[in-house]
Length: 347
Image (cartoon, rainbow, N blue to C red):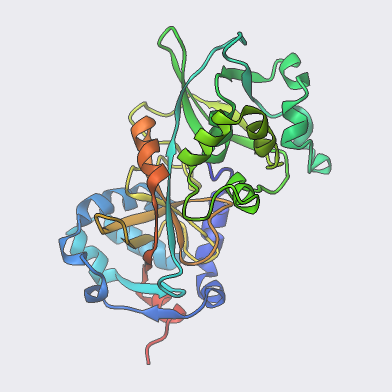
């Protein structure tokens, strides 16, 4: 889905090098399942079903062996406890859990007075790496050349919603005749993303504890001219493609090219957490979230061993809940026993 364009090869490479990479994320500590707060009462079956959606794609020998055993319809909790060990990489308390979702936005096939903000397919010249980095966001959005070239997939009503569609990397577009299409990441212009939240904090408009996607949306709408300049402060720009091979009930595809599952799929930094690995989340939310999830996605803003982005689902309600998600806590990775011992040796 968003996180956009990370190939399965990245996942497999991360797994093969997990022991070497984990050492760069701070101390790695081997835990017992009894150390995981709430483990006994977790819904292991729901997590097992999500784990099995991407397990067959894993080729690292330790993981492939486990995935083969998983096809025998084992008891889920016993399966995890028998073949995995929990490993905490990095220092608890440094973790930041955030949320993301698949937007659903009103759209038009043609530009009109209200729907004036296009989302584009990538121009052919981006296929040549020598053209990267290409035009900045400000240059693309102030020049209508791409629209004149017929590259607009659809037109949106709100520039800040277009921006967040690009941040999320996928979405559903709803047209007046009831037709719905899904779009997903296709390419980007080659500029590094510079989050507009950081720019607002740099300007002193908000503090770290005040800023959120909802706050930013409202600020941009209240301040249209300054808001336009704020959006243009991020030079990165995402291009989309139409996704026509996913059922409506499925989530968008993550970095492993499989549909994501609400509140079970999580985006991680694959330099430290192998894509496809079960992860135990202890998030210090008001409800004290304790949940077994699966690392099935990644993203440019997700960096470090104790950083994770939880997929909340699709549509406005998921967006509201994802926008409120910012919590500390602890992230623990479940690794095959041999891999776990190489990352965090006993004794």
